[in-house]
Amino acid sequence: MPPFATLRPGRLFWKLFIAFLLASGTSFLIGAGLFAFVRPVSAERVVFDALPFNRSMPLLIGTVVSLVFSAAVAWYLARPITHLSRGFSAIAAGELATRVNPLVGTRRDEIADLTRDFDGMAAQLQQLLATQERLFHDVSHELRSPLTRLQLAIGLLRQSPDKLPDMVLRIEREAERLNLLIEEVLTLARLKSGTAEFEVGPVDLIDLLTAIVDDARFEGRARQCEIHYLPSAAFVTIGNGDLLYRAFENIIRNAVKFSPMRGRVTVTAEADAERAVVRISDQGRGVPAAMLADIFEPFKRVDPDGVEMTGFGLGLAIAKHAVERHGGSIRAVSADGRGLVMEVMVPRRGPSS
Image (cartoon, rainbow, N blue to C red; front, top):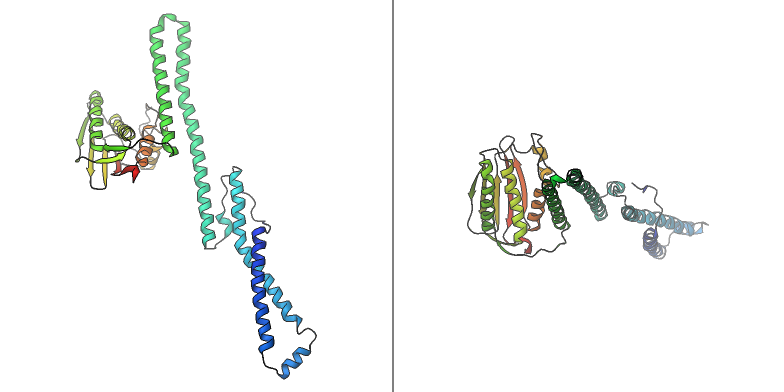
C-alpha cells in the first residue's frame, strides 16, 4: 500500500481553505462591526477604548480563529479526496492491493462511502486478475497433455512406420481434443466478458430439455442409468437456444457420468408465469459442502474418491455463465452419499428483460 499517511495539502485543500476563510472572516467582520457601532456608550466602554490594543485585539483573535477553523475544515474534507487520488494512481500503476477506507478513520459520510466503493472496486479487479492468471495457467496445463501425446505419437510413428493406422487415429483424437478445448475456452471467455453478442429469440425450454434427456438416455444405456423426466407445461423464454442447450446438456450429462451403475437421474421442471425451475439430481457420491462453489470454476474437477476424471472441467463453468447471461441462476446442493442436486432458474423474458 502506498504511504498515504504523510499527505501534503493539495489544490482542493487550498480552495476549501480560502472559501472557508472568506466566509468565516466576513462573518466575523460583520459581527464585530455591528457590535462596535450598535452597543451603548458606557464608562467601561470609554476605558476599554482607551487601551492601546483594544481595537486590534478582537481583529487579531478573530483572524486566528478563522484561520484555524478554515484549515481544520478544509483538511477534513480534502484529506480523503487526496487519499482517493493517490489510490487511483496506485491502481493505475498495478498495485491492486491498495485500500483507502482504513485511512479515512471512523468518519460516516458520502466520502467514506466513496472510499468503500473504491476498495470494493480494487478487490474486484484483484480477483479478476487472479482468476485470469489462474485460467491462463490451467489452459496451458490442459494444452500440454494432448500436445505431449501428439509429439509421442509422431515420435513412435517415425520409429515404427508400420503403426501408421494406429498413430493416425491417436493423432486425430488428440487434435479433436485440442479443438474441443479451444472451443470451450473461447465460449467461456465470450460469456465471462459479457460483451459478446448472441442471437436471441423464443426458446421452448421444455422442448429443449426433452431433446437433451432423449440423448442422455441413449448415452446412459452403457451404465444402465435410468433417467426419470418430469416436465412441466410449455415454457417459452427469450434467449439463445444454443447456449441454453449447452448449459443443460452439460449439467445432465454430468449427472449421468457421476451416477453409479444402474443409478437414476431425475430431471424435473416447474414453471409459473415468471420463471421455470429445473432440478437435476443424481445418486452419485455428491460433493462436500465446502467444495460446492468450486465445481463452477474453470478446470475444477471434484471427485470425492480421488479418481482421475475425464473432461476439461469447463462444462459447469459454461453452464453457470450461460444461465446468468439469461438473467437466471444456478446452484448446487449436496448431501454426502446421496448425490448432487443442481437447481437452475430461468426467467421467462431472459436477457431482454
